[in-house]
Length: 348
Image (cartoon, rainbow, N blue to C red):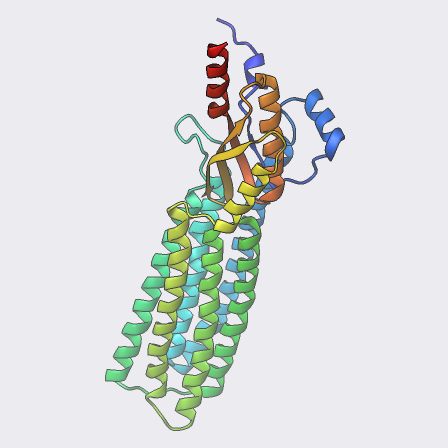
């Protein structure tokens, strides 16, 4: 029983792809495809997808470090001043820093190669991490509310106001930097979980500003300002919870931006030899976008010609949709024309 190596060289046209650049253009690309039928760009694409995972992992750890420093600075001030608004904010920052852990693990797991059981790979781990992030945000909202209500019922003095104000500013600055970084990288590599984590950091920044307001209120002689701001923080967290939950829910339900689907449809329809585009399905698996489509071609084409059209359609698709990493294109004959042709032949 020996294996034929040929089986490994030729696969169905389903390639792993990253950003879709670095193909030659026109004749050079076709020539290269003729010479190397199925290795074309697959390696480059897998590299690009790996690069995206690396960027994601880097974003997670850099932001974790940064938020850790921010939270530590705030914790020191909490101990000194006893502000409950600041305590809520610090706890929230710690929780936010910790959401980076499941996300980091998910990025690492997502890089594992597909297996016989997990044939699409492990990219979904990232979407599961998104659920953990959403649950964490929900928990921190509950904690902030509990603390604020407790302080309303049992007022306690808040001291060291300038320190509290400083901590609010530290929290705001640290979180906003992390939020921008996470959202930028998340959008670039197409990771819903990373974007959700960025949104999460951004509201933390706003809640830190709210701490400043609480300190100002107490300074103005309104002792209830601190717990009321604590409740305001809870409300802010609930709003971001809604946004983050929507990002993650859509991803888990295989939602894709309709503009991407439209762009893909145009790219396929514009391919020479494609008479019509049948079903077109797209979904994210982690931060890799997959597409499956049926295109109608002339029923008189040879298998080789039909394949060439499918490969060309795939190239156009990968250029039109930058984060698409895999496309499976199935060619169908134009059955109406074939049937008419058969009828004419029958009458003669």
